[in-house]
Image (tube, helix red, strand yellow):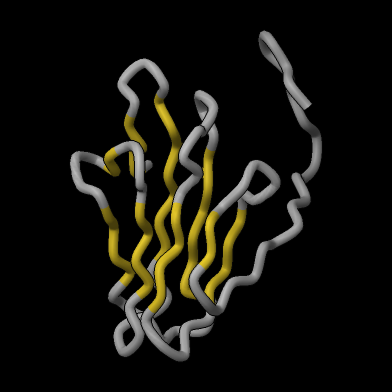
Length: 107
């Protein structure tokens, strides 16, 4: 769905979580990504994102301090860095792509 201009929603938005427990590349149907890490692994952001594309990556079970999850971008930086590491239990990161700057912003 694409909306140009203002719109409002009454109620809540339902998203289907993409549960991840091993290396994974995000795609255009992903949004909320709860992770369960039993070993360190990497989640890679899409190589060709669209403007405003947003992802939420969340340590859902609280073991990122032992098993870090690395969010990586192969083509664009994440707030100036090639990666962002979840290393605290129950940590999360919300990322939005800004095409005018060719960067992922942590919001």
